[in-house]
Length: 239
Image (cartoon, rainbow, N blue to C red):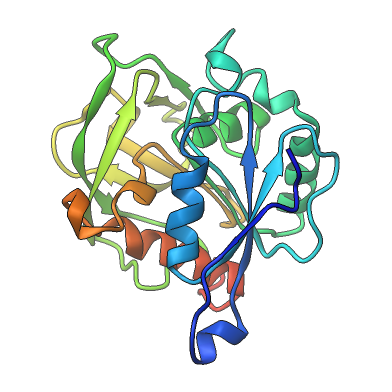
């Protein structure tokens, strides 16, 4: 699979001049990569698909997204094998320099396994796969706060079997999102997503890419993805 495959949605006006360029990392078993590409392109991004075996990231990227799915079949545990893919060395190095990185569901699991985010994702409290819309409340989204004021609530779907976020509460993570309704998976302190200390790496279990079209029941994922793209353009608030 070529890393130069591209999906572009033209935009008109000033936004087209600052269109962020986002690489979407694809692993064996990724199944939300095209959904993420479609959602980000529809919101004005230039998108490049990046194969997990690539040893370099495409030039000119202003952000990276790691989509949901079941990388490497979730063998060992979710994200445990994907962290060793060659491309992750580049993601880790670029994240350390401040490159915005978004991980959704399996992407969140991979970011935790790679050490880019603290904590771990373990099997849901009832050991069952859960798939439904949930409400989440914005807490501290780090650099991705454009239009996401603390306290804002969003309705976004989840679909996971290993989504309970565990963290040492004596050394708390920087919480980006919390479940606003019933805790669907047993996560510590109802945490739905966290952001790195530097504020440029965001991981979350809900799927904003599946909540950008009113035909799907909610468009609440769009503000979150727009905030990520604003961070990729560098026009979000610095953390």
